[in-house]
Image 1 (cartoon, rainbow, N blue to C red):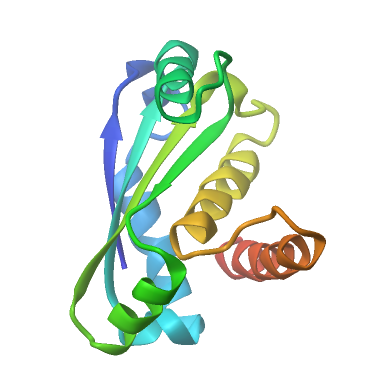
Image 2: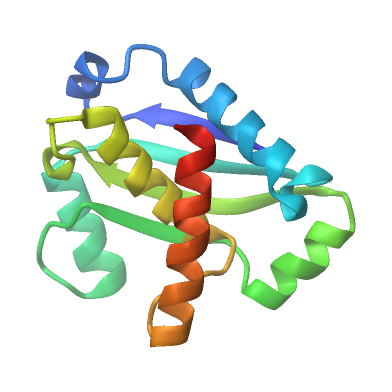
Length: 149
């Protein structure tokens, strides 16, 4: 698994000095420990931005004229993604956009990990619209966070 990082707001550099190295370690652990990722060649993009850009994206794509902490843009429906994962081909799973202004600064990396892992789960087809989906997603989110901590 590979996460391509785009720093849209330079203020992120205060908190995440080397995002490529940060994600290389984290994604290796996830790839080694989560069976669907083991044989997969997944990639995604993570855009590190601010309130203005994420508000614009939220308005444009979700019709909500307000800022938020994270937006995920999955590239595939869950069934299609599951089929692609079995094919062992390169698969682009989508984009995650995170708003620096909404990441709690106390224990920044822990709070940041919670957000990008949450976004990653959306990219691989998890949702939290119904209680049962929410609990499945939450369980896997906790597992991922434990692995990368």
